[in-house]
Length: 205
Image 1 (cartoon, rainbow, N blue to C red):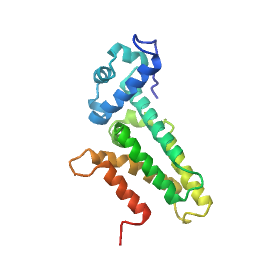
Image 2: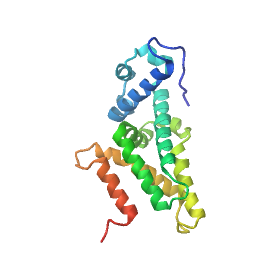
Image 3: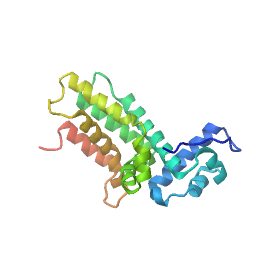
Image 4: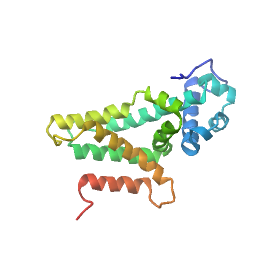
C-alpha cells in the first residue's frame, strides 16, 4: 500500500496543522467529486497550500485517499466508542451510535459522505480496493464488540451474526449520507430518525 511521505515542513504553520488542513480539504474534494475526478491541485487550493507542499506529505493521490479514509474512519470509531456504554442494552447502544452519527453529520457532513463513497471507489478502482483492504477499520472493531458483548449477555438471538450486524450499522450510518445528497427530499437526520424508529420498534402500529 502506498504510504504518505513527509519530506519536510512547508512554509506557514506547523506540520501537524498543515497535515490536518490537507486531510480535511481532500475529504471534501473526494466526497464531492469522487476519486477519479479529484485533483491534487484542487485539494491544495482548498487547503491553502501549494501543490509542492502537498507532495511533502503525500506522494500520490492514492496515498492521500488512503490517509483520508484512515482519518475519517478513526473519527467515526472514536465517536461511536465514546457513545456506547458497556452496560447498555443492544437497543440503547445502537441508539447511542445513531445519536453520535447524527451529531457527527451535523458537525462535518463530509466525513460520512466520504465514507459512503468508499465502497463505490473500491469497486471502480482496483488500486483503491487493494489499499483500503490493508487498512485497519477501527469502527468495525467497535461495533463488533458491541454485538459480541450483547451476545455474551444473552441479549441477542442465537442466530444473530455480530459481524453482519456491525456491518449493517456502519453501512446504515454512512450510506444514508449518499441519499441525503440526492434530490429525493430526505435529510440525513430524517433517515437516521427512521432507522431509530425501526430499532425502537415504533415504526409499525
